[in-house]
Image (cartoon, rainbow, N blue to C red; front, top):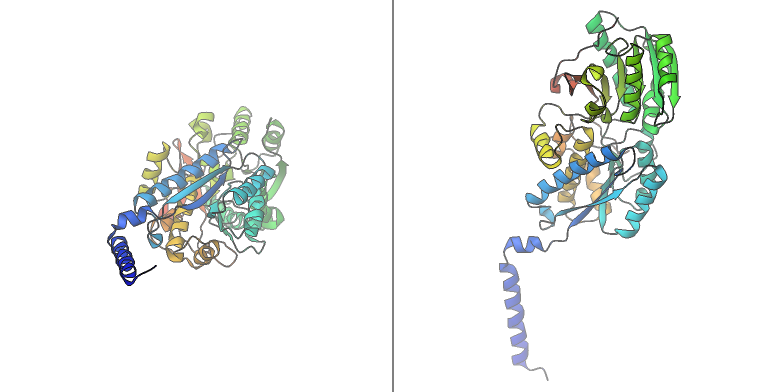
Length: 415
């Protein structure tokens, strides 16, 4: 039988328990907070494994910083836990990776990836249905043209990069030579990003700029032999070559063949697009003098003001410099952190709402992306800018925008 004394005793015990809980050190409460899972789907095998690894290292660098700094404070100090999944070497494998993620990791609240636009398009078909917020660095315009609500694009889309790259490059050429180029050759692979990048140029952009298109070739990567393509360059001799590909091996074959035909080292300046062109191992495959002067546009690259990020990333990865891939993995993780602080709960829908509301002009997330972090209703970063990077003295250096540039631009020598 329950007596009044028993009730009083139980109440006293409850009060004591409450008092103990209230007096519990904050660090102990924080240690009990459930980790917040963020997915990273990226190519960790196959021809694009290097780029995927750079994204992973960037995300790990940010997660380490966040966790060492107290985790998600609005969630009791919850730590960031990265869930890494290999996207493989095809869109089908990437889609399967996303399906496994949804099925096996129900606690994941957000994700990033997968570098190649073709992969990202497949992945986000899955993550959108699962209402999983997803941030990508992939360039294809179609990624944020589908009316999706849970997809965010931190990079300037390829179409807009194309529109901004062409006049910028032409102005650099005019400043160096005193006149605008009159002719151009075009080579591009048939994956989503190069196709989107070249689309505005092919649909009248080059002609409107006063350029005569001497040839326009499309191929399926990776190349086994660049000879047929470079023969077009040798016979046409354009004033500059637009070559947009997704693999370093293609760049290697092309520049080597151009050198063999005495077209390299500025004889026919090469302009390209994509962060992979600035990776350190480019120098393991190509001598510095062969790639000297190569210019490419990219959504992000190391600029003035990112020294702290570059140093932290270098200590974690061993890389000599940070590229767009590392910056994306790092910056995306910090974007999720900022939105989680506002949401205060590991809920996909609420987190997605907070990402849409972000307007970051300072802090690690904003520092990762020149122009800051703010997304429109379609999920595109409204203040994204294009960067022009050029290989100079064995290192890729940002030469545009001017106010954040690491070096002055140089137009390659022409014959």
